[in-house]
Image (tube, rainbow, N blue to C red; front, side, top):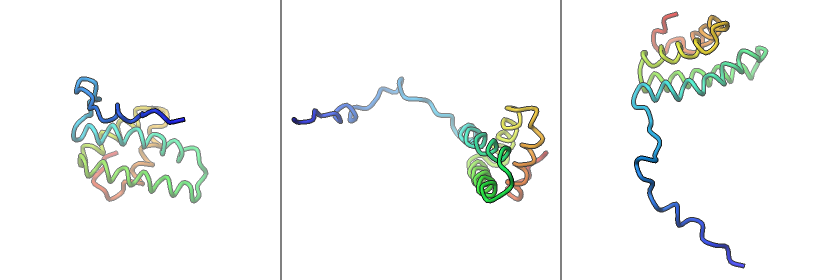
Length: 110
C-alpha cells in the first residue's frame, strides 16, 4: 500500500495574520531568557551543592551572556527583576544566584 503524500501542505506559506508575532530587540532577549532561567534557578534552589549545581550555574551564566549580547545591561536588569518578581518569598536567594552567575558580565545592581 502506498503512503499518501503528506508534505504538500508544508510548502504553502502561512498568511502573515496567522504567524506569531515576536518581540523585537531587548524584549525578545528578556522573554526568552526569563523562561529558561526560571527552570534553571528552580533546579539550583532544590539541588544540593555538587556537580549538577555547577552545570546549572554555568547554564545561567550562558543565558546571561546571551541576554547581555542581545540587550545589554538593561536586558539583564529586566530579566533579574522578572525572575525575582515571580517568587517574592525567594527573591533574595534568586538575586544572589544571578549575581554570582553573572559576576563580571556587566554591572548588575542588587
